[in-house]
Image (cartoon, rainbow, N blue to C red):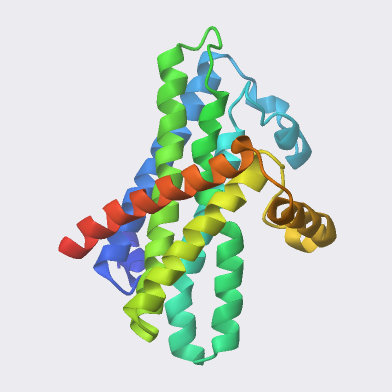
Length: 242
């Protein structure tokens, strides 16, 4: 049995397998872009001796932070693929709901990579166009991971309950994604902070709800949610037509 055949068994549909392979190709392409960039700036990989070194050196000089962000973007994708099989085997709304909750916590990490375009600027000796291509490629891959992840959950909800419930789930998720990207990019919270720093995180969320927000805050949430929703509608339209 070939390796591709073994991987194919992990997916319940050919569509999921094809999408997975495409996402893997994009991820490999992104890694190659970062590798070429490191080679061009003569970065010494031997300087990374531990995970602490990797954390310290993952800044905009190396762009290694993009690999970490892309890793986080893959998490909601894998969780979304596990939702339907978990429910079919357990028939437990509690377990499935718990998995969906964890999925929702990590979902903003996928489209969050779009905001890494803020790091785009001239950094000699790297050509400006190369960093532009690198950031767009990572952002596109992250957006695809988020859209496909949302699509899997949408199909599950619509199948188990109704089409209306599915679209309500999509609408709520894109709004929460807009909020999640905002508190991640500008307030610097992470998905796991709901466990490690729940009180402080909830306090910031409460301030967002009760205090008048500037255009900088509320505007970014609405615009990002709208962009994510339109991107999802585009993907959904092509998928359903096919």
